Image (cartoon, rainbow, N blue to C red; front, side):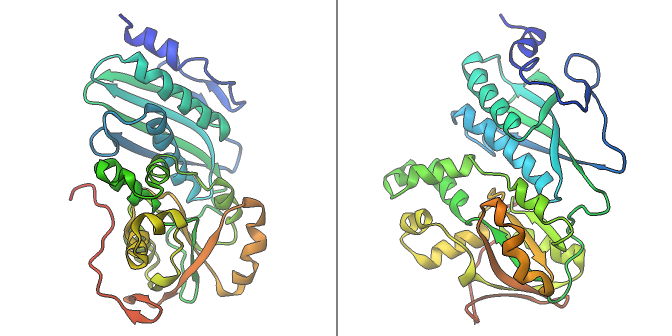
Length: 321
C-alpha cells in the first residue's frame, strides 16, 4: 500500500525543473522562495470540492486543469505573473488510477505557465483540492477592483456562457445529444487563463476582475470597491456559436452570458481617452475583447437590451445558496 510520503515522492516531488527564485521546494517543513526587489507577491487560495465543483467521476485530468487554471485566473485579474503554487489534496483513499492523470495534467499546465509546485499536503477525507498560488507584480501597478471611474468603458475577454451550458450537460445527461454538448462540457473544465491580457493591462486598465461567479455578480465587486455604477447592454455580451446552437434561443444565450459562473474570463475598465488604443495594446494576446458598457455614477445599475429594460430574473453563483 502506498503511504503518504511515498505518495508525495512518487507523484509530486521532482516533477519539474526548479525556478531560479525557489530556494527550497517540497520535502521540508516550509518552502523557501525569494522575490525580486520592489516586486509584490500576489497570493490567492481556492478550494474545489467533489460534488460541488466537479463530479466524483469527472475526468481527473480535467479536474486538475480546472483547479489550477481557476487559481491562475485570480493572479491574472491583478496583472501578476504566475510563479509558485502549493497543493493540499484530500482523498478518501489512495487511488493511483485517478492520481496519475490528475498529476500529469496538473504539471503540464503548471509548466506551460512557468509555475513551480513548492509544497502542500495530502490527507484522508472527502475528495477536495485546495491550491494557493503566488504571482509577482509591481505593487504600484497591480490591477485592482477599486480604480474604476465614471466614464470608463467596460470590457470582457472571450465569450461568455459556455461554462454554464457545459455544467448543464454535466448535470443532465439528456442534453448530451444537443449540438456541441461535448464541446461545452469540455469548456466548463478547460478554461484558458488570460495571462498575457492581464500583463498588458498594467498601467492601462483602471480596474479588473475575473469572472468566476458570473458577470452580473462579479461586476458588482468593482462597483462596490470603486464606489461607482454601471450601464451594460446585454445585446453586446459575446457568445459563441456553440452556445447559440446548443440553446437554440438567442435571448437565453444572453442570459447565460450574463449569469454564467466559472468562465475565468476578465472583466476590466478602461478610461475613455485610452479606449481607441486597446486593440493595439492587446494585439499580441490573440484574445477577443468586447465593450459591453460604461461606468456611471454611484447607485446606477442599468442592465438593458439595446436600450430596452429587461425583466429577467438572473443571478450569479453563490456558494451558500
